[in-house]
Image 1 (tube, rainbow, N blue to C red):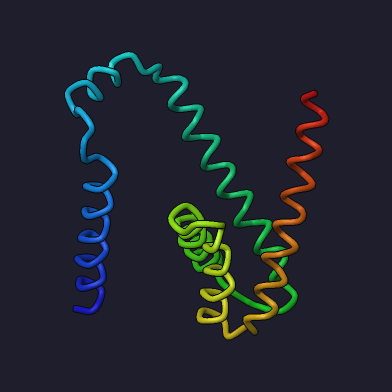
Image 2 (image 1 turned 90 degrees about the vertical axis):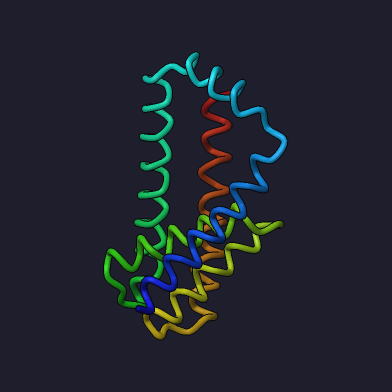
Length: 136
């Protein structure tokens, strides 16, 4: 019963946020604009997002491997919730979610998880900077 309760609460929260996101939007006009969408471009965007998420999960897994043992499914779950929190909370406060979830899942120290998140952000910044200079 506990799992169903979480599901109902999660769907309720999702419904509230969807309402807040789409209130005032002309849904008829939005649906008409979807007809102009290029399916190949949409597929490319979805593929790119999945690759980005998988890369981020693997990178975080490599960083936490010395001090925390978690299953691949737990790592994906932690990464998914962490990414959602980054999108929802201001000032990237969602980055604190992954170390917290990691400590709850594996018993690893919160400070170690925070350190791994900080190192990951630094590596991410360096890779983005490198990509910028390659592109320019």
